[in-house]
Amino acid sequence: EAEISKNLPLKGKKVLVTAGPTFEAIDPVRFIGNHSSGKMGCAIADVALRMGAEVVLVLGPSSVMVDEEKINVLRVTTAAQMYKAVHNNFRDCDVAIFSAAVADYRPINISEEKIKKKAGEGMTIVLERTQDILASVGEIKTSQFLVGFALETQNELENAKKKLEKKNLDLIVLNSLRDKGAGFKADTNKVTFVEKDNKVTPFDVKSKQEVAKDILEHISKKIHA
Ligand code: CTP
Ligand code: CA
Image (tube, rainbow, N blue to C red; front, side, top):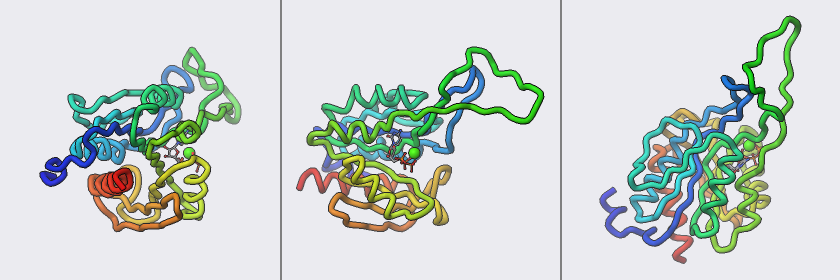
């Protein structure tokens, strides 16, 4: 860690990071969410800071602690709020890393009152698509180095490559849920990098801090090349 802070490879660079889940309200007491802890993205923000970057962290509902004195933390709840915070900070950033687990759907209507249960079989909540935040910045990107994450349970590499292309990314970090010590709540992750030129690099199971370091060292090499 002392090594990282000595030569500050990201000094003068603005790094935008998204992290955590999003919550989409159903009524005043209920929501649709997911199991993302925000640990991976907060680790990325932390390591980027220690590599000398100016860091903006757009963070969904997460209880992970970050150094809010030095990191510009923008707290959001919904995908729509995350979209806005990202677009307010994208144009002048040098690197953008999208690790948030954004809801793909939200309820069409948010009930103003708590929904009461009714007699009978079940109930239906009608959902609509949220905006794909990463794809939307992929469309407007100029010189930014753009990184996405992919969480897949089947055809991992193939699906990750499709996302890389479709969203106009430079790098996608494939997150394997199948391996031991990988996934949402864990402190470790098993990732594979897939690059724009189709280069595939698998990594061992590592702490999320170390995965963050691998990602940022890779980016640092690429943007200085
Ligand atoms: N992402 C985003 N906004 C969304 C959905 C996803 O910014 N509304 C970003 C995630 O942060 C991640 C990448 O897109 O970096 C891939 O997310 P993932 O959920 O794996 O892929 P999707 O494109 O949503 O496809 P699907 O869930 O159907 O696999
Ligand atoms: Ca998704």
